Image (tube, rainbow, N blue to C red; front, side, top):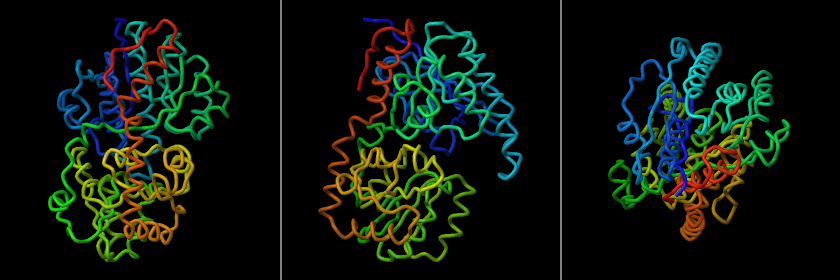
Amino acid sequence: MSTQPTLFLVANARMPSQRAQSLQVAQVAGAFARVGCATTLVHARRRDTPPVGAEALWAYYQAGGGPGPEPAVREVGCVDWIDRFPRSLQYLPARLQELSFARGAARSVASESADAWVLSREIEVARALARSGRAGVFLEVHRVPGGRTRRRWLGECAPRLAGVVAISGGVREDLLALGLSPEAVRVEHDGFSPERFADLPSREAARRALGLDPARPVVVYTGGLLAWKGVDVLVEAARGLPQAQVVIAGGMDADVARLRAAARGVEGLRVDGFQAPERVPLYLAAADVGVVPNRSRPAISARYTSPLKVFEAMAAGLPLVASDLPSLREVLTHGEDAWLVEPDDPRALTEGLARLLGDETLRGNLAARLGERALEHTWDARAGRLVDWMAGRGGGVGRGSASRRR
């Protein structure tokens, strides 16, 4: 048996929070622990977010539950004035928060054993550690920065890193365009935890629990409400589906209020607001069709994103109508395992949803084919592949494969 790898996962995330980023971070940390890494999550200590303790955090995100110990949690202080400003004035406070967290996180990890891996979601942390000469530093990139300074930082530190994880093929393409070596960049999409979907209620029971009409078809969107997610397109599309119940679950409070105002008067449309992670499977179980209405701009939507909702639909056996974008075509194929429609077009989305709602055989075929691919997209399978890859890229860091449960 080889030595158990030690991994520090660094993320400038508020834990817990209403954002999908925090769910992804928690699930990734839990998966690394389950596949055999001694894992510590290093995250930001934020104002108005009291620490809940590791056990409560993993229970909230349903991210623990492996044969070994759950991940440890380490909070790092930062300068946090963001929420004191309106959104239009948050740019500089956000940069200050990011830089102060990066400095503290890099210092925290720098004192650890040289044999430990570091997987950072923050360019600034990876850059600081790489400049110090530390080995075994990996960077996970969810979007290639557009700003000149951070792009330069990425270019400077990348040759010194052990490797870079790209969340999508679009991210990888742009990293290679910046001069990164193809051998140093690995694409790993997001995933799902099978345990969260192991005991789904029947469709009828789920609809009763949510107060939905059991006799009318249901379309469900779960996730954030940022503009590029295209949920406003779904609101307009719902105007053409008076026979259906369209349910939107998720989002920060301010975005929920904005969307409810836009949805006023749309028959059959419900905006339920943020839901704890444990309730998301209930919404998927209640649905006939799921929807991923991403917009064609900006690049994070069209080329970079790897939406959690796609993989959760796999787990729930839910057929999808999704925007026909490069980021989504990486994991979905029109007519085979999903129904893709023109982005930014409410009429096209209405027609796509109506097509699936009116064809039970098509829905069943799409859901079955999507579900066939589910096992390769679990968080544990993803973590196992990354452990093997990091062992090969990290030189003397964490040699050998971890004992893993996939």
